Length: 422
Ligand SMILES: [Zn+2]
Image (cartoon, rainbow, N blue to C red; front, side):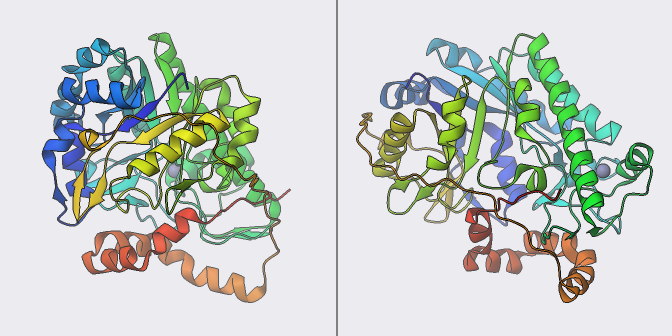
């Protein structure tokens, strides 16, 4: 494997963000502060053969709050150069820390003007909102002034995904803010339906609108990075596991020319110590661009430290399927303590190539048409969708219930690949 990545959020910003995202987390701060130091990098190079690291630049706090985070990574970039490790400056896409932008109109809205949550303490911002867009652009421009080799945009999500989908009817998804309403009306000649989307024309128009918005944003940010001589990538999540047009708001064939590599984030790690990314073989075998895959088991906040066997399984599969492994190096929760990768506990890896693999291609499911009772139910739930998600994140007891019931893990692991309405 010629490239090996570490997905490595670290420094003071990551510790601050953990305190925003979770209710009173117990944090091993030293492990996050040590991720970019020479001791860690030297072991990462020697044991894992790391060539690329995705490192924290901007988590979506205000510029004032983030100054220490940016200075922290800037002062450590020489450490990576010393070990020949390519750095990708990690910048948040369309979401910001809500409390830091209280007085600014940057956020996505539902049909009742409510914010759309991204996590506890963070809300999604709208790429059609000039102020929100200017913030993203200014952060990428600022990151380009630093000695990163690349710029990486995380969480390229435009609004919320639909919670209900039929070929002729969907729940609210995306964003219904004033900026989206104005633009949609001027481009499609009729008012944007703010809540549910009825009829295949409205659904296909809205999917098109949302994807075109994201395409413009991705190409704008890519041009800025490329003109500064940086590589450019975004977090694609897994467009072969969840339909990207519906659940994230982008079309891979349309945005791929803006990207220098594909970074897929998914939940392909299994228990015990198995991994299955065979559904990505068609992508890996059809592109000349590097494909990095970062596979979680249950996801951020739910995974304890990976064992030597887990990591070896990832390396083995990467060698067989011919992709570049990117190991999650941060936000493990072991014995209720949040910590980064404990490199001292890992032994050197081998790259065996004899792992048996299954061929598990995920085919899109055909969407059914809606029934009257389903439409009635969705109509009733729609106004509370964003509010319920917000409550489940912000309310300490509900958040615990969601975590213990493993609902969010199940949702993240469930395949949601559908044929789009025509
Ligand atoms: Zn909007």
